[in-house]
Length: 186
Image 1 (cartoon, rainbow, N blue to C red):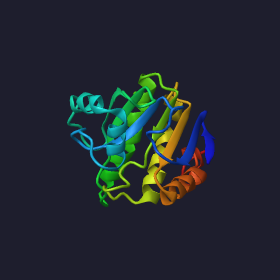
Image 2 (cartoon, one colour):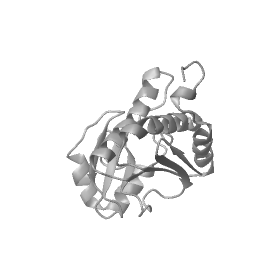
Image 3 (cartoon, rainbow, N blue to C red):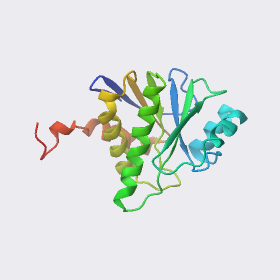
Image 4 (tube, one colour):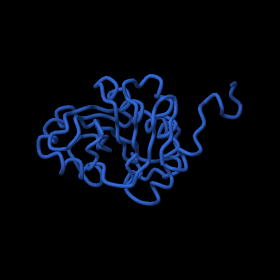
């Protein structure tokens, strides 16, 4: 699925984030120590090679909602942005931290001159964030960054299974700009 929002093309695909050769920057759902781990983090570190561990560890630690950028080494991309997603809870600050991952990644991608960025479903694995809520935050935050994200013109959400892809596709289909949301002046 694909949709254009304020000049930014957003798309949802199911697949392997380490196999996106047409994307400038991929985003890693990292841990605070930036040392590799399981899930997306482990897959990215394995594909990038041992240099990624050295480069990212030198920037650690970072907190939930923060992001840093490194070269991509053996990956087919120019850079990897490492975001630490929050562990899910009902605390409102958790949603803000998840949105912060997407905002910071978009900012770093724009600063790096990237035209395209691929995101995983940050915090939706072992950190337990519900897919529907995380997908809405991801899509809404990235869309809100569209005006300030030049030169980024394409964002791809690379999702690990049918459920994640369906949640992100629904969030993308349902997204309305802030001026079209109920209770907001248009």
